[in-house]
Length: 118
Figure 1: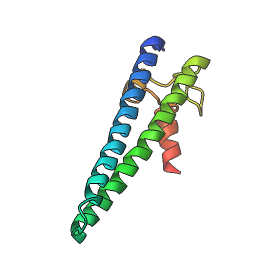
Figure 2: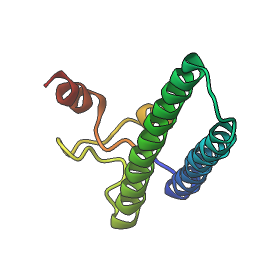
Figure 3: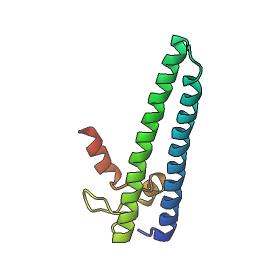
């Protein structure tokens, strides 16, 4: 397997920055909109319910972003340790096509499928 490790490092760092920035923007937008809506006083029940759904969605996206950042950090650590591109479960090389699709992947496709089937 010929993985360009420096290219992968740059890709992971850029992906981490984009995800972190997007999560920050979502949180900031939620703070800004909740400040606006709380100042409106009497609010229609439907508007309040919509706001709650939107807030829950934002929290879910923020949580997912945190999980992705954690996975990216782990991939960067594997790069530093020389274990990047090796399946953490079976020890076989992770195909480059999988790393192209999911650059922070810690498992090969069969091991990931096995994990998800449990």
